[in-house]
Length: 321
Figure 1 (tube, rainbow, N blue to C red):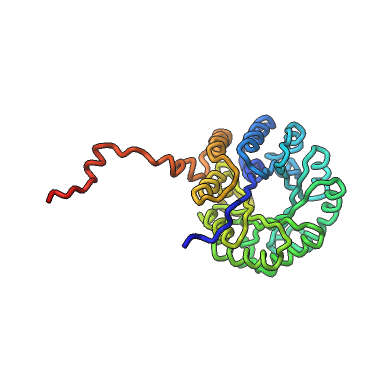
Figure 2 (cartoon, rainbow, N blue to C red):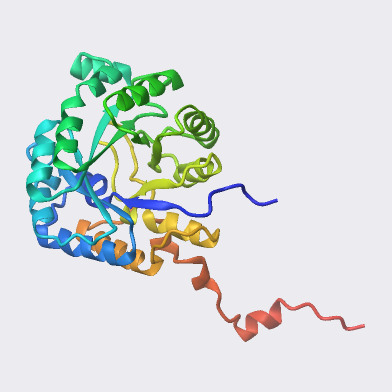
């Protein structure tokens, strides 16, 4: 009996934002524009271009405005950016970005220590961002990081995640991503939470965002697919990480995800060979090896080779009777 999974998946490439923001190497605007065009040509339906946050805090994305201003967006492709506040919305409007994403941590302890409020209270403060975005005619979504676990909590109760979801819906956001930035999620947890969320909030357009810190990123995607999820983030070459989590690995590698889905005959509309070429370029740009299985081993189809005659002879059994 085969796996009961969705047959079509949308992938958002987050390498330009979540991947590169953790790298020491700062890519130029020209390099980012080249990557953005190649990602568009590879068939990605959604691409996260960067962030409208403080350039002092995250210098890797300081040129996001310039990238948007100098790129011709392809019709039918969603080019989005992360924001933290109303100022981020204004920057998005000014440079032609048509989709923004807010984020809040599911860790109550983390929020209380940094913002002196709960995650749900943080989301309530996003109301002005949502209102301004809608006035300007740009889309807005929300993300919940640490949804499956955090370094500051023994566990993140599902009830806490639900409170945040309902807070997002309360300010008018119905596209929500569940993020495992800490890399603590495991398949049965993902399936159970995913099933509960889809059952409780069928009106929400759901995304999942996994990191491969403990080697469970791909299996978590598969578990989410069994729960009916069909939208996932991934990062070229597996670049990325989480600055707040010790030992955190990068996002699941886009080429690994697309390869798995191709082998399963799940439609993504993405050209795997083009993705691998992009990821090889990224590895050269950042100057170090990354967490990508496919870049190390190649596609499974690449291994279908002719057996050397001597090897075939040595391993062939013959009946001499």
